[in-house]
Image (cartoon, rainbow, N blue to C red; front, side, top):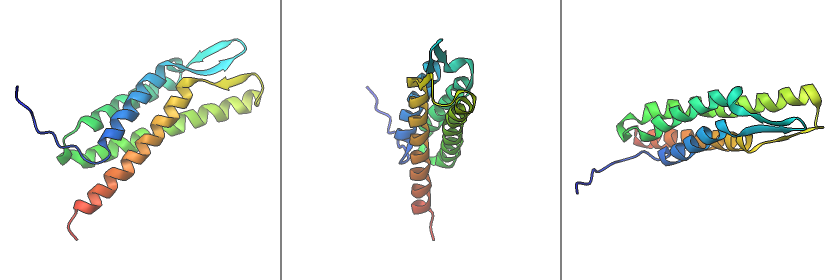
Length: 133
């Protein structure tokens, strides 16, 4: 059975893990209210799902395309942190802290955004180390 040597840049493994969190987190409930759970996919969860697919693509790129993976990691981090923070701020402005709780989708999306940010930092540092001075 042939084995293909696959080199991956530092940070791309974390980008793959973040992709999994974003894809799954987009479909799970983002908020629990007295009226029932609020699905993320009917709102900003759809956009974080798309960002998760972009993170998946960045994690699967060959090492020589690490600049593209870096850009994808940054875009995904901005989306995956910005939308949940906007969602929480929006709900807080509407009803305050009474009557709702964050759901697993919101938490997984924020965790995926943090992992995308860490992956972007690792990809950037690896690129700086490989660039001749």
